[in-house]
Length: 290
Ligand SMILES: [Fe+2]
Ligand SMILES: [Fe+2]
Image (cartoon, rainbow, N blue to C red; front, side, top):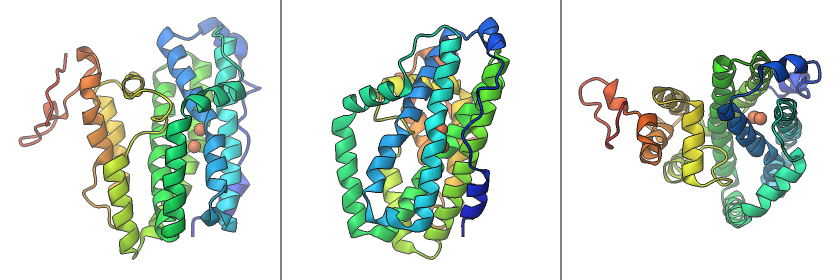
């Protein structure tokens, strides 16, 4: 079993009060970083609504799941707070995290309601497969999030942003580990669950935050974090992990997404994996390496 006790023991609110805010102010953020951080804060602020949705589901009444969700929601809640604090320290005007969250939610409501409905139906009619799907979905999203935080921590010139994002990424990686282990356990020897997961991923896979922004905004945001070939490396890593789960061999939905968004990017931001792939690795779209 995914070791919930271990997760409980290491769960904590992200430390950020101790960061060197004077240094953060002195170095500041680039306009690109300021925009990215606001997007991160937006996405993080939505976790609580997701929590409200899943809490309604009968399948969430499992004691271990409830324990994980409570801890997870608590940790995510402070990610948005910590990012908002850094933005404010660096002179970027931001709304308080929770008013940001409710405003965004109001805009995303129709889509969220549809997803909620689909989720409830699935959870009622196929509870076991639904939980397997939920875990696999969570694993994919947490791994993407982890990599996004790590990427910015690595590339920014602001050491305080590096430190904060390293701390957040550590928690995201722990979330990933939980979801991933649970997904493996729940998919093992469960053909109907494997089929459902594959079907939903192949027809619906989108990175976290897709419901909040237009597809073009989401595409630009991702290629800002992961420029050109990095997008394919990061999304490829998600596929590598997903493919290693029972019944999911050959599923490359994250890479397919990275390819799909290329036409939405400005020509100099595009990348074709065919340029690095060996013979036969021709991509189905045209793009320029620039
Ligand atoms: Fe987070
Ligand atoms: Fe997370």
